[in-house]
Picture 1 (cartoon, rainbow, N blue to C red):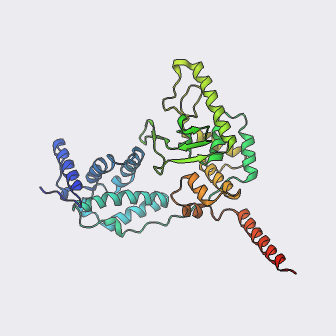
Picture 2: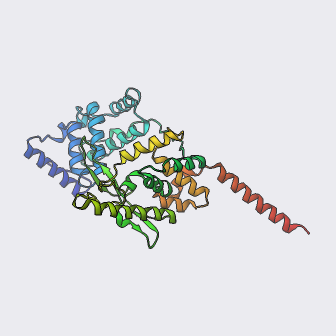
Picture 3: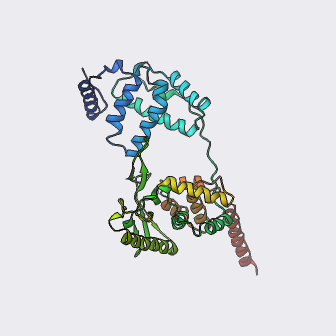
Length: 353
């Protein structure tokens, strides 16, 4: 038996996978592999060792939920573009999956087939020729100034008031603020280092764990003084609770935001409470992520550069930030027009005798 790959490491992985399968009594010649069997090998040998736990969990979930039931029984070498296209169409029409979700499923299947192609298990990647449904760009709906004021008023007395206020005025994602560690807050510099997030394993009964940020990059926010004051108060109150709880204190991840026993705030709990508050101010359609959008739009309106907002949000490029937020503020357009008018008036006045 020969094993192939674009690189020696690919061939070694294939050989190791075959050896393990043989030891387990489930080895199949590549030509006899079903797509389901190949996906299992691909996930265990090529994804799990190098991917983040959340990525691996997401891939595995979509493989088991969508790809295997529809295409798993087909031989890897017999899988063709027509079968895959019919699968995508079914996800859209019969299962009513969103175009973005179908695109993500396609990405997983394409990667698995691409690895099989590198190993010469197949001659072509059948997913290449498929057409995906168009992903419609969703309109963002940040809170207006009036809604921000109503929201801040509504959370007075709310146990998670400080949590929501920090989220609104830093643009951190819910997982990032839930997973904000104590050592990330620098009161001397007035900064917050966003370096991790709180995640949950996808399977039923999955445990919570700390992972890197969505982009795998660390970013440092220079927060407004009132935000740092809020964090100082949160940490001081936490120290009081810790002293009261003694050995019963539970802050296993050393996080800023916890309940009175030190247990971390579950993102789903934050989302549920946010939805209830948003509904009370007439924004039942709002999502927790809209606090992030609100921060971005507010920062731009108040004069922050696109580059600053990009860095604070952790976007890969300023062009992405512009694409998402550049068209949302009529106020910014009016202010720009007013500045041009003022400049024109100034030039004309200087020309006058």
